[in-house]
Each structure stands twice: as structure tokens, then as C-alpha cells.
Image (cartoon, helix red, strand yellow):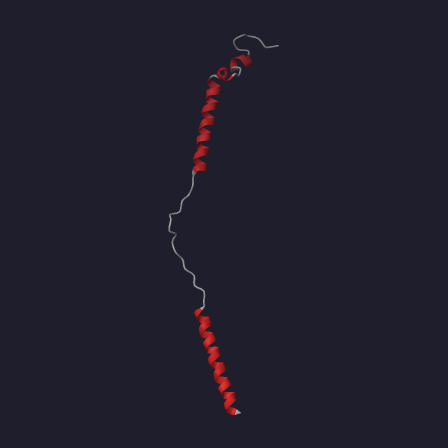
Length: 88
């Protein structure tokens, strides 16, 4: 009877050692690698806004220079400059 208990203990110890070694081999690994393609940053929004601001400034200047071109009354007409009187 002693022989059986001892062989079970040895078998159990060997099984635990084998499982421990097997679990140690399954540890997760983390790899950090550089990307294959270069990083691309799209700046189209900034350029588009810059163009839009320039166009708006040019348009405001053109309207101020010649409002009749856009169907607007000139600054002199709205103030009654050339006619000398107020509009009714």
C-alpha cells in the first residue's frame, strides 16, 4: 500500500511540474514594431479655410470699391452725398 501512495505522489508532482512548464511557455509576448507605411497627416482643411478667408477678404474689398457692380447702393447714395438731400 505504501508503494502505491508514493508512486501517486511522484506522478502528481511530475504532472504539476509538467503543467507549470507548459503554462510558462504560454506567457503572452508584446512586440513593438514600426509601421510599414509612413504616417500621413492630412492638412487639406487648414488650406481650404485659408483660401476661403482670402476670397472673403477680396470680395469685401471689391464690394467696398464698387458696390454698384453687385447691385448695391454706393456709400454716397446712401448718405445722399451727390444729390445734396435726403431720400423720402
